Length: 263
Ligand code: BGC
Image (cartoon, rainbow, N blue to C red; front, side, top):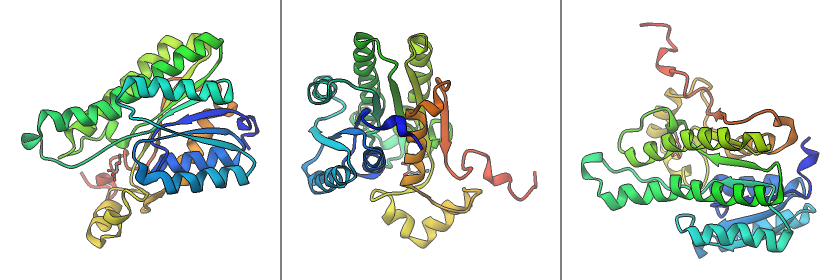
């Protein structure tokens, strides 16, 4: 499956942990050339392990430190991929941040931080990738990691929900602009997925039970299930898919409160 991803240059932001790490591993296993962006040195051990795993599988990988909310860092990321591997085929704007704060207590800087990383960061990544694709006359792919909260409101996470809602129309708008050049831009919207960021909250029995109530499939998802969709959306198997969102959420966006058939 997805043989065409071999040797593709795939840039992934927020690759040091969570879904970004899983994306890196899965593309690497298919012998892609993976450019792993990370912010904090605390991820270095994990990144080096992932690079080794990718190299052992016959792929290649490099790491590039940078803050996705700083345009120079984002441009440097894309240009490093071009310098090291000659091109960019797939840009995955994955880096994200979330922290619960009631809206009336949220400072403007707390609001702004999440918008800057999750929305502006993805815009700058998409913009840099589109420029490179146009320069090379390449039918490149852009994927953004969104969330079920691009459509489901999320109390205490107003900045996060706003960033993901914005990401949806950003993706749809940019797709409409660049589909004519064969550039495909799509979002992946995960629901509750176990990663190192969520493991603790989903191990708490009450939170776990409350979360399962919201999932028709009655299972918390796993990172590789999201990564599989990234592989599909990056490959030629999806070459007529433009400007859409694939939810990977066990049915969470499907009004699970109605499961009992009442109302
Ligand atoms: C968040 C998770 C959350 C899930 C479902 C995701 O976007 O990153 O923390 O569990 O949405 O609410």
